[in-house]
Length: 176
Image 1: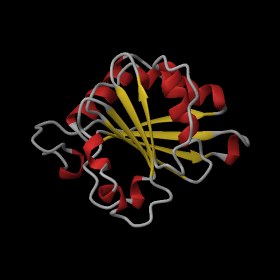
Image 2: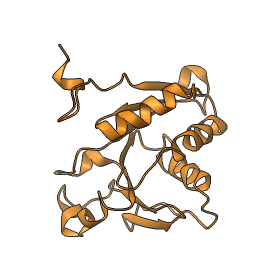
Image 3: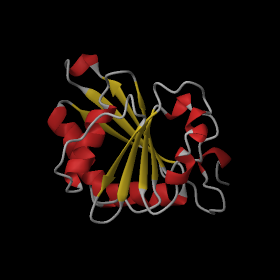
Image 4: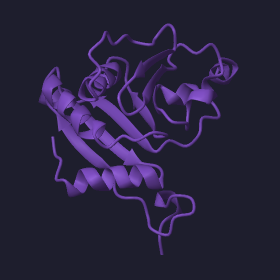
C-alpha cells in the first residue's frame, strides 16, 4: 500500500524519493541548474527554499543561462517578479521574501502567471498563503562541514509532472 504523503493526487504510484546533491562550489550549483533546465516544460511550478544567502537566486541565474538567456538576470527581491522570454516558454521568477502579507501575491495578480504556458519559479514560497501545489521543491542549505561555498540541494517531486522530471534526472544518471 502506498503512503498518502508520497502519492500524487489522482496517481496510483508513489512519488519518487527525493534526489540529494552535494554542491561543493558554484560550479556544482550551475551544473545542477543545467541538468534541470532541459527537463522544464510549460506549466511547471518550482518552489525554491533555503536560508538567506543559500544560493536560490544564483541557482535561477544559472537555470536561465542554461535555457539560453543571455541578458541581465536581476533578483526580484524588490519588484517580487522578473519575467524572461525564452525560446520554449516564458520563465517567471518570483521572490516572496518581502511580501507585505501572505496574500499579497494574490492582490498583485501573480496567480495569473502560475500554471499557464510559462514556468514559474518561486523563492520563499513559505511566505505566501494559498499557493498551488508545486511540481518540484528545491531546498538549498549551507553545508559548512564541506567548505564555505558548499551547499546541499534536495530536489523533491510534489506532482506527477515533478515525478517525471525527477525520474528523468535519476534515469539519466545525473549526479552532481
